[in-house]
Image 1 (cartoon, rainbow, N blue to C red):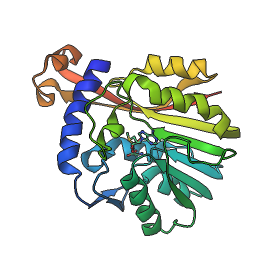
Image 2 (tube, helix red, strand yellow; image 1 turned 135 degrees about the horizontal axis):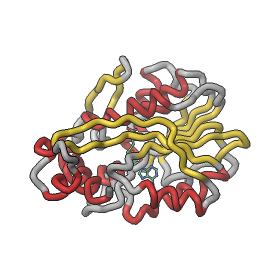
Image 3 (cartoon, helix red, strand yellow; image 1 turned 90 degrees about the vertical axis):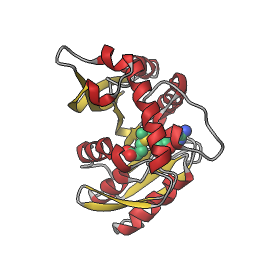
Length: 246
Ligand SMILES: C[S@@+](CC[C@H](N)C(=O)[O-])C[C@H]1O[C@@H](n2cnc3c(N)ncnc32)[C@H](O)[C@@H]1O
C-alpha cells in the first residue's frame, strides 16, 4: 500500500536524520556493528537482521549485497562461507561502515566494499551466485540536500532504481545464481515491482515473510493510518524476502 509506506517512510526519514548523525555501534544477531554518521540503522535493523538470517548462503561461493548499509548481510554471508563477497552502496558512509564491520568480524579479506550507483563500478564480467538487495521499496520522494544519503535508504521515486536494478540483474547472476529482494507489500507496491521483474524475464516469488501488528493509535493520527487499520484497529506490516526467479 503506497500511501502507508510513504507516510511511514516520511516519519522514519525525519527520525533517521536526527538519530543517525553520529558514529554509533549497534548489536544484532549477537554481534556488534559499526554504523558511521550518515548511515541509517538504529531502530530500522529489524528487517536487516531478519533478511540476513533468512538468506540461503549455502553453496554460494560469491555474493553481492546491493545497497549494503552497514553490511550485515554481506558479513553474515562471508561468515557463512561465501568466499567472495562484494558489498555495494551509493552512500560512502555505508561503504566505510561495511569495511569496518568486515574487519571487525574477521572477514575483511573476503568482503570487497565498493561505492557505486548500482552495478556501475563493478567489472563488466562480475557475476554472482547470490545477489541480495534490501531495497528502498517506497515509491515516493522527498527533498534531498547534497551529501544527504538518508532518502536513498527509503525512497525510490517511480521505482526507477528498481527498474535499472532488475534490468541489469539477469546478466549479473551465474548460471545457477539466485537473487532476492527485501521488500514489504504493506509499505511498497509488490505488483508494480513484480511487473518490472516480469518485463525483465523474472518472476517474483515469496521466499519467507514475517508480519507484525501495530495498534493504529501508536502509528499516529494521520488519516492514512485509519485507512490502513483492520477491524481490530491494528495495522499489519510484513517484512518479506522475495526471490526473483529467471
Ligand atoms: C533499505 S536500505 C538497506 C540497507 C542495508 N542493506 C540493510 O539491510 O540495513 C537500502 C540501501 O540501498 C542503498 N542505495 C540506494 N540507492 C542506491 C544506488 N543507486 N546504488 C547503490 N545503493 C543504493 C541505500 O544507500 C541503502 O543503504
